Amino acid sequence: MSKFETFNWQTTQDDIYHNKMRYEHVRKNLDAYLKPPKKDDQRKYYIRFPGNLKYFKIVLMRKDAEGASYIRRIGLFYSLLLLCHVVKKDLAKLSREDVDEAMAFVRVRVTPKNQSKWVEDIKHIAKIVVPELDEKGRPDDTVVPYAFRHLSGRIDMSKQKRKEVLGPDDVVKIIQFFRQDSRLQALLALCYESLARPQELLWLRVRDVEVYDNYAKIWVSEHGKEGTKFLECVDSFPYITKWYNEHPLRHKPDAFLFCNLGDSKRHGQMSPANVNKHLRNALAQLGITKQVTLYTFKRSGVTHLRLAGESDAVIQHKAGWTSTAQLKTYDYSQHEDTFKLQLIKRGLMIGDTVPEALKNLQPEYRKCAFCGRNNGVVDVICGNCQRPLDRKKILEEVRQKEAQISDLQEQMKKFNEVLNELVAGKTVVIKDAGKVVLVEKKK
Image 1 (cartoon, rainbow, N blue to C red):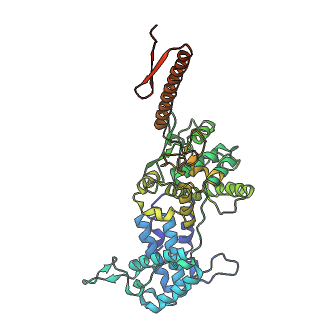
Image 2: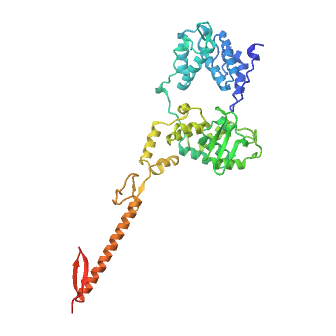
């Protein structure tokens, strides 16, 4: 047996997508890629120059030793396979023209986003299998080999498609749709609020839940990309507590928090495919035409927090990221979204046209206590009745008017007394700017 066959490749844990099994299949059937695919084969590509097979083994053993994730190893394998499908010579003898030929092939076969990823992978692979040499003749894996150095992963913006993301109202509709399935309600609500990855959520155990009076902390104790962390559970708290109380194995700490309830693999771990199947059914019945997976709720949560004005640091800590660099990956906000946000903030979009999740961004109106008109938050005088909007000023004005009325009533009382005295034949002397003094006649 060769060194490749005996090399210990099981150096990390499997993920929720079972990529360990896929990688094992690739490793065991590596020689099959030397032959062109048959008509009924699912694969399209093969290694045209058999001598390049050794480079696949070098790359895979390096990643096995590093303990890279299985999906990462599979990704590098397919990137190298795409290159070796085009070139017909040893990778060590490739010229820039040969690499350009492969790049041209990739441009028409791969999406713009994956083109950039392919360039990144190929440069990384080239540093492993055909490295440049330093001044002492040793492999220098810090320098991209000359034949690959000119490749650019820049994405042509004109070829990009509009990214789809759920609106706040869509999120509410989908969660409400599963009102008969508290398990899915809790899963979707937690994914949207905590910004957790599907793999992190589906590996949660019952013991990971810490319930408090009106919130909960849910610990990611395994399979966390950034290590251990806790998930915030505030808005999703009612859904989590409802499912937690209904959980059939809630007294077993090692049971999966989100488990299967069907006959197949009952009480076992839920899979993303199972969740996505339920989502497709919900979308069809709700009339939502967007392509939605469990991951969409994470992206939508990040996008909506960004539009709601949350700082990058708050989103970073909420998601458990090590930096804010990942925001550009998950923020799907568009120009139309920011434009709508400005309309809401300025009060130009009101009523039912404002999504429920964004109503807190509407400006505060100062309602006139007299005529009921909504005035701007900085207005002092009502634009309709010209009365003051400030409560203190209104009370002061009312007190002043009450004092004026009291004075008028006093004057009217004095005036009536004067009239009565005149009728009685008394002399009336008026002094001091309207103050009335009565002087009785001498007999």
